[in-house]
Image 1 (cartoon, rainbow, N blue to C red):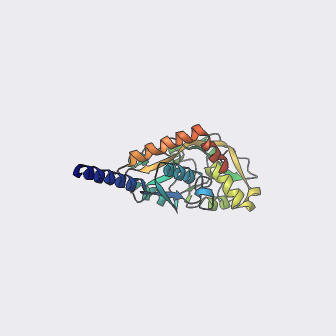
Image 2: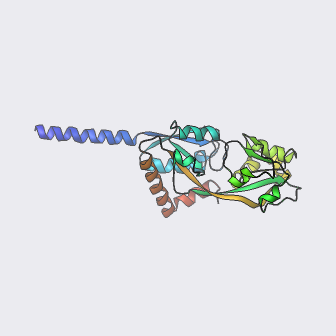
Image 3: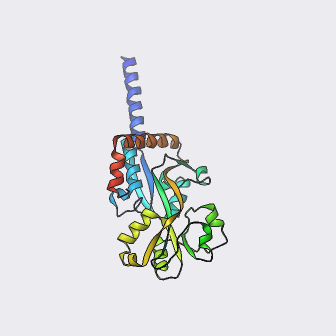
Length: 248
């Protein structure tokens, strides 16, 4: 009888500990104004947040998304105040503090010009003498950042850069192609006749979900996400989610 009670207690404790671990709420740092990947006005808070939430919940975790400006979302996840940062590019610096998943999408970085401008991008030499609006805290190609050929003033909001291009206060700006199309279509339709996107691409970068190394179980979370992502790709639910968020 004593052995039976002891084993029962051990079993109950193991179940309780397992349940507690699985009920752990993962905090997700969503990036403001990064549609269609991350935006509070979109279904599921945008594609990257929706994908992450679905996969981690299927793995047994509760999730909570908080929208933050990009630079704060990055810094607070690196510091461990948030567990997950979806929709991030991988850099060597970030890899010191974050673990990166299998790619979830491909980001094409294109330029925006005034609609009447003949500019087309083929190489950095095409930017000589121009002013190209950038976003503070974003990652760009090292060659782009190091080039002495052009000016790169930074602001905190892509919409401000779009307005400045339309008003001819700056020559160009740049961002993810899908993000630019979404913002112009939904938040600045009056600018649409005044702006055009270049065919030439500055870079194409895979987009990842990243996990803070401050969590002791970061490797376990990463493995759970990658397993879930592979399952969604295999059963077609990943493709359906792309379509839901107009990513195709």
